[in-house]
Amino acid sequence: MALTVSPSAAAPDISIYDRRESQVRSYSRSMPRQFNRAEGVWLHDSNGGRYLDFLSGCSSLNYGHNHPVLKQALIDYISSDGITHGLDMHTDAKAEFLSALEDVVLRPRGLDYRAMFTGPTGTNAVEAAIKLARKVTGREMILAFTNGFHGMTLGALACTGNAGKRGGAGIPLSHVSHEAFDGYYGPEVDTAALLEQRLSDPSSGLDAPAAILVETVQGEGGLNAASPEWLRKIAAIAKKHGALMIVDDIQAGCGRTGGFFSFEGMGFTPDIVTLAKSLSGMGLPFALTLIRPELDVWSPGEHNGTFRGNNHAFVTAATALRHFWSDDAFKGDVARRGALLEKRLSRMAKEHGLTTRGRGMMRGIDVGSGEVASTVTSACFDQGLIIETSGAHDEIVKVLAPLTIEDSVLDGGLDILEQAIRAALSPAYGVAA
Image 1 (tube, helix red, strand yellow):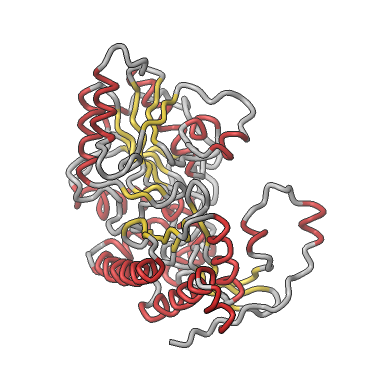
Image 2: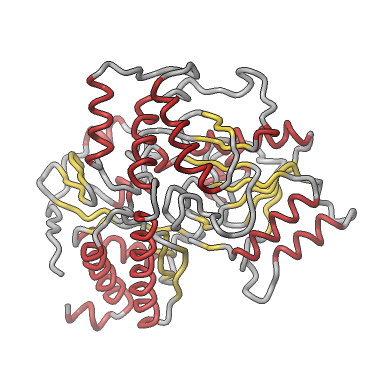
């Protein structure tokens, strides 16, 4: 289909950013436009350009930009002078969110978790999870995995594998051991068995862990998807050795991989789950650490955050849960689109002898190097498609389209991606085009 994308020909004046914003900025370097409006799957810039968004705020906008149902709920709440900032006080908005969480998410899945409201970003949820695991077990060691990403504050960063990110800490990042993720040494090596051997050997040098922290699909690490069998083994290993199992569902959760949680139907139940990104449904800062009730041993105020009471996010989150997750219709839509995405990416990969990664609507294609991936994403941006990379060498072109995208629009965006990959890997085609 012919998409109504219309990228701007010229970049805006960015002198204010060069003059006043830190050099730490990143996305704006590969997308040099000034955006001013968004709806659904579309982003608009200040020069009238229109772009199809396959980034979705790095999976913070699973329901698209300014979804009308969520937007209206927030407008109504603000118009009624509803509480904006509430610390951890009781509010109508928080009660409604907790009720929606209980009614729509937890009870139908047979789950029993206490909700711990942390600071407003995913790294805050991870910090709370690992701090609680250490408090409950009396141990210090956290087991994380190769290529894992869990946040940029020091505790979460210690659990992150990426050397570039870790290098920004400026101090040693300790009390974490990075074990081999599923498939790290190839499909023939059972890394769960290797971990069990290490933990069972008193001479391995590996201290007894407080927790095992894992992403079922590694978002920033290259869309590596763990098998259900491997995850069940890890859960059993954690239980056997007295550790808590923490699933970091910050990017893979809220429907991105199919179910509301990425571990649904896999035959294990985590002790702790971290959520953020699309939890608010609308891009509002909101992070949550879900913990089994018997693990809730906090003293009042022992862990907190000034913005743990973002009531605007409670409003949109509760509305999103009831609107999208009260039945299986939305889940079915995501499954259909995930199958379409898998089919298209597999076709692209086959044409060039490449491989695909991921699960559900969290998928990508390994184009071999960060240089090629950058060429692909730059070409996509020039054609009006916003898409980014992941992986140890940024070699994975990652598709994180909104889960609400129409099938035909998804297909059209993938046409742009397909052409960009073909041009990058087939020089003769690029000249002809």
